[in-house]
Length: 187
Image (cartoon, rainbow, N blue to C red; front, side):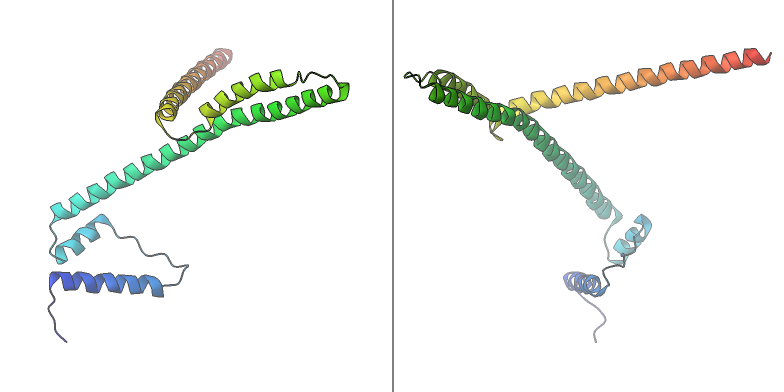
């Protein structure tokens, strides 16, 4: 067996060995973590400069951060869509129920004129515009609404954080006052 390998050949051999090791290892076992120093030593042994390795590690950190931000943004979008649709469905249910009731009243009173059509027509127009606003999940109008919603969420979170900080400061003052009174009582 030969003792030297080309760089690409060595990479392929190592990748295949790692792949086989992962497939042969039992499901419960966890692969051991490799420290940064050990990774540097492995890279040096393979002829990879520390600068190249650090560059790859930084790229991976940036990519992980980008993926985390995208995941968070996707979650916020789902929350926004859910919130918008949550306002539409009760409107739709009320529309169906009330207009059915109007139809039944009109039918049971046997009035020749179908008066229930007027509220049905105007309410249908309002429901149509509500659907146009709340159902789409793409487009410039959606993006503008989503941006405004995010700004409101951020302001709400900042306001809540400020309120909690003020409460804890008040609680700290109260604790200090109680401690001072206890000290005075001891004198």
